[in-house]
Length: 204
Image 1: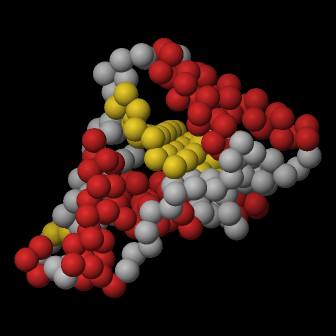
Image 2 (image 1 turned 90 degrees about the horizontal axis):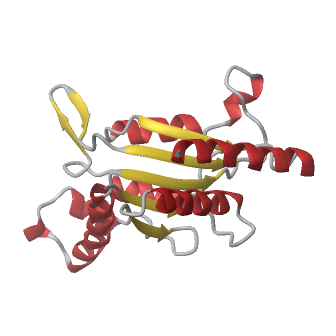
């Protein structure tokens, strides 16, 4: 039995392609593996806090040194980190904004990438602590940025997400792209159909 953490990062509602695909994927997964459990967090509509001076002060001091503001800031971060640790599978749906990830998702990453919780630093360098997890990332993109093409440089989502989750120890990541969504109705329909097919194969 697996426990899935499903996060939507788009602030859009029913018009969001990334949300739609993730919702369908999780529903298909649950229908196939009914004993698996899901925790859902909607950071697109309900963003997590940005890092603050109180947060930073708390991370680099001990609890007995925390101000009330630091204690409150770290309580939210601890909740998010504990939730992240509790899952052994992740389903994240993320739209592309200005060739990268939305600020909502960056705020989430900043909350969970924490020294002593999801990574450590020792004489040998950085070491991720989160291992043996599987991640599916659904990316909705207006353009098309295939590997090896001149346009690949505009896709700052994929390399960053690989780097930051790999930094924490997660390297088993499947990327599913619904791209070319702004290139006309036919391209959009084909992109969504292709993403649905890829996700269906993952469930099977």
